[in-house]
Amino acid sequence: MPTIELVTRFPVNDEQLTALHTEAFGGEPGPARPWAERLERHALTWIGAFDGGTLIGFVQVAWDGGDHAFLLDTAVAPAHQRLGIGRSLVEAAVGETRKAGCEWLHVDFEPHLTGFYRDQCGFRATPAGLIRLS
Image (tube, rainbow, N blue to C red; front, side, top):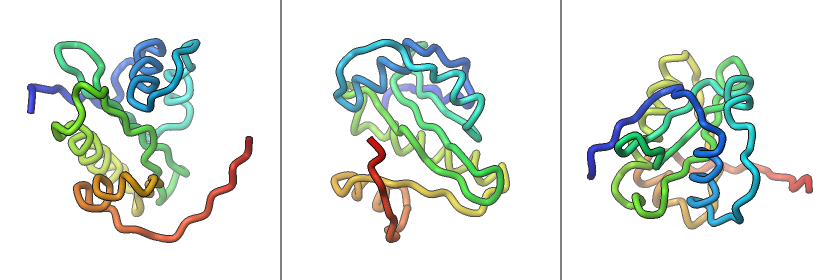
């Protein structure tokens, strides 16, 4: 694995994080999303993976203010995938969530990510529900 620095609650550049998210999830480029504002308002924590100062990975933990936290937006730039960076981000997020006193960390994922979240990161499968709102 390359030398990657994980930084908790780093100062978010909306353009950088939008570009990473678009690249990692294969979306169409568009205007920057207000990541910094949303994270400050709703996140327990967030963690960036940096390679020489370049943001190449990200994860956030939203929460209910009590016992439950939610892992969201795990993303690694395609050129850096399958190097253990995603797992390191999730492990760091688990540690930060535990330090905050949460009892549960939830994550939703698509079936093709079962090997990552269950086998590599230790999440167990549970039934869940989902409603598409748009």
